[in-house]
Image (spheres, rainbow, N blue to C red):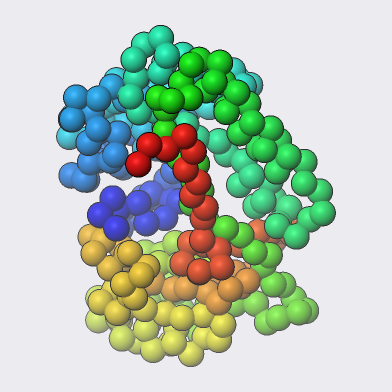
Length: 277
C-alpha cells in the first residue's frame, strides 16, 4: 500500500503524463517515493542483493541501488538465467536475488485462461524443475530459501452479445468532467474530476451497471489502496469478467484475459521451498 505502484501504467496527474511500467524499469523517478523495497532493506542489514528482470529492481531508492541489477530482458534462455543467478549465490556470495519471468502472464492476456492448450504451463513447470536441479547442482539445497509468487489471476472478459459491455461515456462526458483518467485497461479504472465536479462524476458513475465506483476515502481496506498519495479521487472496479471502456469498445481480436488483483478468486499464488523457518 505504501509503495505507490497502483497501476501497470505509471502516471502523474499534474502533468497528465502516462508511461507503461516497462518503459520505467531504469527510471528511478517513477519508483522512488521514500519507501524502501525488500532488497534495499536487506542490503541495509548488510546483505548482498541483486535483481534479475524484476520490476523496480533496476532503479535507485533514496540514492541506493542493489549491488547488481539486470533490469530489462536480454532474450537469453530461461535456463541460462537460472544458472547465472545460482552462480551469484554460490560463487559471489549474494544473499537475496529477485528473478522475474513474464509467463504465463503474456500468453494469458493474449489467449485467455480458458484455452485448452497448456504449453506455457508445462514450460513453467519444467523451468521450476530446472531451478530445483540447479539449486542442488550448486550445493545450495541446505542454504537457499525459495519463494515463488505471482501478482494476480485471470478470467475471461465477457463480450457482446453475452453481456452489455461497459462504455462510461454513455453516462457522463469524460472530456468535460474529468482532468485525468486511466481507463480502457481491464477492470480497474482511476480518474480525477475537474474542480467542483467530484460529486457529479461520482453520482453519474454510480448509475453504471456491472461495476462499483469508490471515492478515495471509501475504498475498502482490503484493497490496500486507501493510503496512496498517488491514487486519484475516483476509483472504478468492474464486476468480475467485465472490461472498462471509456468512449468505445476496446477491439480485442482474440479472447482477452481479465487482469485485476482485488477479487478473492483471482488472487496470486505463493509457494515456499527449501525454507528454514
